[in-house]
Image 1 (cartoon, rainbow, N blue to C red):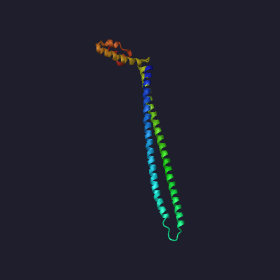
Image 2: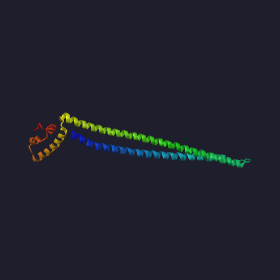
Image 3: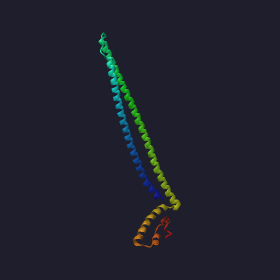
Image 4: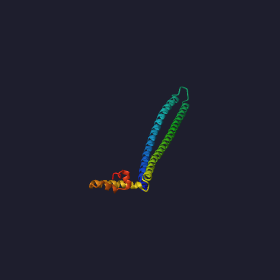
Length: 207
């Protein structure tokens, strides 16, 4: 029984490790792809928003500049009108820069929040998947070990019966092959088998 349990643990541990590694690698690749896609989309949105904002405010600035810097009507002081025009233009440019900076900051903050949320969600999903996979594999291993123990103790009466049965099965195959080759007497071949094997395969009575 101990040899069977040890063999089961040696076989299941590499499989568990391989499953966990594969799941982690797949999830990491998915995380990287999702983050890259989100960053690219956000950058494109930022560029589009900035370009549209600059175009719109440039149109407004040009319109205001034309309204402010119309040809001076007769009788007005051209110098005062010129200074007023420059002042208005500076104000318009300043407002334009403020709007662009505000838009860029807002979009960058939104981008950072979106990326953080996506990363957190993907990490949570990775942890859940790994926990579920490891849990399922561990449950399967525990069930297999429990079944082996129950069969060994209850059915075979303990004392390493499971290992004896496995040895007997191999011996049974060897004896059957020998019987087929040499046309030996079947009862004599069966008598050479392990008692647990005879009881397991139900051939003791056939002898």
